[in-house]
Each structure stands twice: as C-alpha cells, then as structure tokens.
Length: 246
Image 1 (cartoon, rainbow, N blue to C red):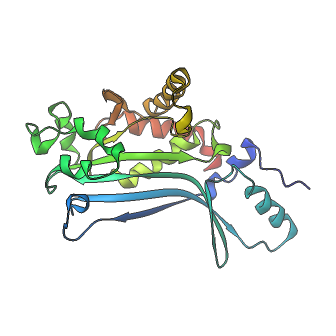
Image 2: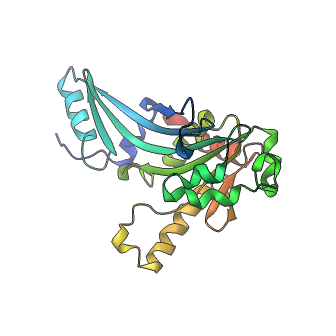
Image 3: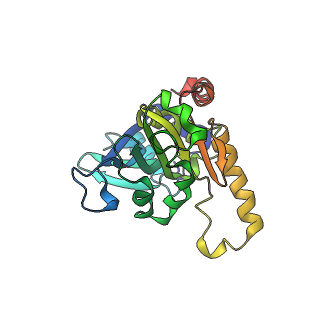
C-alpha cells in the first residue's frame, strides 16, 4: 500500500465523479457602484466528493486523493469531504439594465479595469462596436476573472479546458460575449520582475484560451463570442478525447 498521490492516468478515472458547483450573488437594490443589481458576482467549482470509507481499499484511495496537489481546497462535511479540483470566478453584466459599466468595474478589484475596452458608449447597449454582432445570442457579458486548477490535474490533455467548457455552458447561456485576461497568476508577485519567465508562462496560458475559441481583442483581453462555433467545436473535441472517462 502507498499513500502517494495518484498518477495522471489514475486521476482520469475519477473524472466521471466530478460535480459542478455554482455560487452567485446580486444585489436587489443598489447602494453604491459596487452592487449594481445588473451585475452578478459568481464563483463556480469542479468538485470531487469523497465519502466516508466503508472498507480498507476505499480508505487507502481517499488517503491518496488527499495528498498535496490533488486539490485546491478540501471542505469537510458530515459524511465526507469535497475536494476542489478547479475554481473559476468572475462577473456577469446585464447590458440592458446596468447603470454605468465603467463605474461598476472601477468600483471592484483592479483586475476588472482590464475589461473596460470591451465597452464603448457609442456601441449598441454600450458594447464595443466591434463586438456588437454577439448581441444576437444574448445581452450579457461574462467576465472570467480567475481560473485555477490543482497541480496534479495539469498536463492531462485538457482536463482544465474541458471543465471550463462545461462550466461555461451554464454560465454563458444568455451571453453576447465571454471575456478573460489570460495571465499566469501562480507566479509569485515578487518574481514577476522576471519578464522572460512572465512572457513564457503568459504565452502558455494564452494558448490554452485560444484552444477554447478565445481570440485577442485589446491588449491582453481575450474574448469568445458564443454565437460563433469555435468554442462549441473545441469543447466537443475535448469531450470526444475524454469520452472513455466520461
């Protein structure tokens, strides 16, 4: 017996046990720019539930899954633990109802300032004119702020991309646009002066988003338009690749 973390191939056998969890909040009435009722803050996760073991084999299996790097977080509950494999958070803006998208973004974390070029007062519903065609599929803009995946699940052929695609099926159903700011957030702040490393790792992150149908729009902001087929086709290819595990 060993308590070592499962190998990549072993982890894939747990793929069909993952659950998608969603948390979101929006204000009923605005008291300041941060809580405009037309903005929804959300956080979603892919979770691997572990139940109390009823035999030695399951106990060993659970112990291995609790090894460092297999999950981002572990939450205990009465009957077991939930292991967070991937987390994704962001903001959804309802273009029909939002008061001032600039004020709303500015009132939040500085990361959201990156997304201001998506909006322009002269565009329809305040969306940049170059992106207006996306309004055929909805009137919301989904902004992905942060995505993280546990280290052990990286490099397995696209598990993270598959999970992002499945989460977006729920999060972006009424959206005109999905946007993100690809950046290697795992680089420690005190090491970001190494511009060569930052550029290398940023390129890797950007390739990941490009493979999901996202394209560069302005500086480091990348967008995906759900009415086009690129994203859906990419997710279908991933589902085919992982079919034996789903």
